[in-house]
Structure formats: C-alpha cells, structure tokens
Length: 121
Image 1 (cartoon, rainbow, N blue to C red):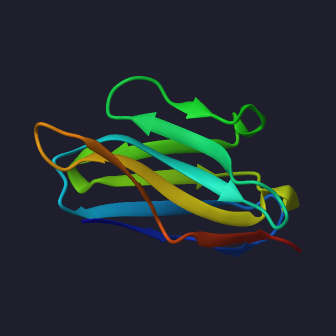
Image 2 (image 1 turned 30 degrees about the vertical axis):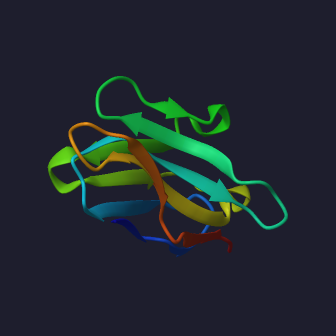
C-alpha cells in the first residue's frame, strides 16, 4: 500500500503565504504524477496543480502566478507554495498521486487525508 501524508496547512491572514508538503511512502516503484486538489465548503473538489515526473506543470488558471507546485523525486514529496492568499482560497487541500508499485504496472491513484487552509483576518 501507499500512504500520502500532508502537512503545512493552517490559518493565515489575507495576503499571507503557506507551504504545503505531501510525502508519499510505502510500496512505490515510481510516481508518475503528483498534485493538489482542494474542496471548499459546499463546492466540488477542484484541481489546483499537478506536476508529472517529467514535463510541464499544470495549474488552475485563476491560481497562476500565486501558487507554485514542485516536487522532490528523491523524497517522493510534492510541495505547494501559496502566496498572496485570499479568503476564497479557504478549503481542504488534498494531495494526489498516481503511483506504480512495480516495474510492470499498473498505476494506482492515491489521496491524502487533506489539510485545512483557512485565510481570514
């Protein structure tokens, strides 16, 4: 099995910054894609950003320029740097990964337990 453990959420004032981390552990051969989703109260879960093992990152258009996703492949960890935070960024943020557990596949999807981000004065 594979576990994704998030950290770094919390309460921040508007205009502030937070950095989320998500570490994957367990039976991992490779991680093809890592990313972040979020879900605000009463809303559907939406994609925030994804980063493949190679290739370009992908962001929700409205977040470009404020959020930056990165990953450390040696640590099986993905990060989300969030700057200039707004109250509408308040949500539970979920880590996501597509993991291959052996050299011959298949790929499996995994989710973290979520970390709360609250932007409020």
